[in-house]
Amino acid sequence: MGASKTDFFSADQNELAAIAKALGHPARIAIIQHLLKVNSCVCNSIVDELPLAQPTVSQHLRELKQAGLIQGTVEGNSICYCINGETWNKFGELFKTLFASYKQITKCC
Amino acid sequence: MGASKTDFFSADQNELAAIAKALGHPARIAIIQHLLKVNSCVCNSIVDELPLAQPTVSQHLRELKQAGLIQGTVEGNSICYCINGETWNKFGELFKTLFASYKQITKCC
DNA sequence: TTTTAATATTGCAATATTACGATAAAGATG
DNA sequence: CATCTTTATCGTAATATTGCAATATTAAAA
Image (cartoon, rainbow over all chains, first blue to last red; front, top):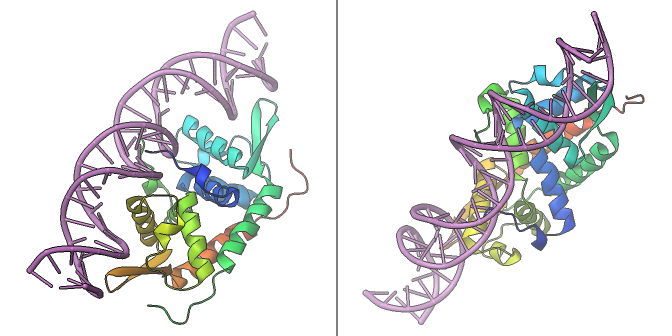
């Protein structure tokens, strides 16, 4: 019907899916890559980095924040964003585990 | 407008986003985890593993296939699915690189 | 050849996402 | 205080996703 049946999946599965979903848009990948590149808190500049209007960027930032991937701190009349190190590393482990749990199948139909 | 402005982002960013998007649903995470667990080709059983109707599962399988994460081979009157090892490892590297490129910030606003 | 089994496709309804103009909010600056 | 700057929120339109019943497809089995 349009709404995901999240109740029928494990918390684990829903969490992984939620992070992946948050990363599932090129604008949000671009934001993350920018924050990783400058490796510090960034105020103003994010909107200028993207080919999107300010309200749209603000919306993407909120989604990344809700997923726990980034954090924003009020600094005067602007807001500084950066990667949320704690959750970033935690999520990195989750994905690492997921991808690493594949054992090359030698024989397959 | 509803449609992502993919044209304005790099191929790199769109690819990462596309994989993340494919993994951005608990049912698809569940399918992937199941395939990783059994570590072989699986015909029939995927529908039974999920709390979803057969057409819905078929749709999720198609999305995972289109993203390149899994592959399906016709085997008699059924179809065997498994992780696509080549692309799986490639995507694993992409995510590993993304998550590893974070250097812990000691001082942040 | 009819039936059965497994999977895909179609069509549709409900909901979510994406994008942006307009506007609000909140602090800085003159 | 008036204004500017920066960011968030609201409202809304366009499009995408999710889910399933009904149906089609394909090959095995009887």
